[in-house]
Length: 181
Image 1 (cartoon, one colour):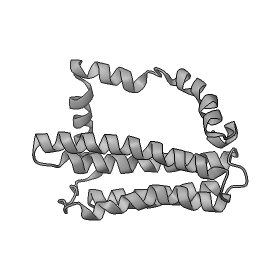
Image 2 (tube, one colour):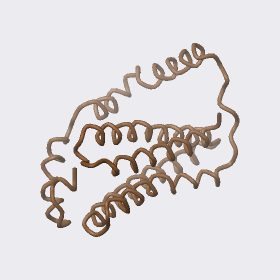
Image 3 (cartoon, one colour):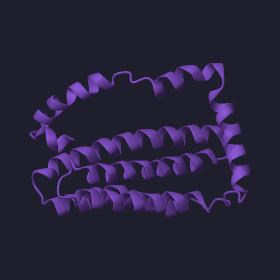
C-alpha cells in the first residue's frame, strides 16, 4: 500500500469518526469521548503518512524546507480550524458543525493526489517489518543528542499552564467552557 493511500484513508475514517462524535446526544458522554479519541488515534496515521512522504524526498534541503512548511501549515491550519469551529458552535446546528468538522479533516487530505507517486511500501512479513521499525526506533531515540527531544515529548511541560488559559480563551471568543471542551 502507498503512503498516500494510508493518508487519504485515515483522513476519511477520522473525519467520519469526528462526524459521528458530533451526532452523540451529549459531547461529554463516554461514547462521544471514545469516538473523538479513536479519531485522534486514526489521525496520527495522517501525520505518519505525511512524514513518510516527506522523508522520501531526495534532497536534504528539500526535505527540510518541505517539513518546515508542513509543520507551520499544520499548526496554522489547526489553529484556524479550531477558531472556525468555536466561532460556528454558537451559530449553526450541531449537524452542520459535524459536517464542517469532518470536512476540515477530510478535504485537505485530497491534496495528496498532487503528490508524485511513490514506490509501494515493502511487503515484508509482519516480523520483518517490526524488526525494521524497531531498528529505526533505536537509531532515532537511543542517541545522546536525542535526549532533549525525548524530554520535550514526554514531560508535561506547560500543560498545566495551557489548561489554565482555556477559560480566558473561552471568554475572549464569547463561548462557554463546555463548548471549548
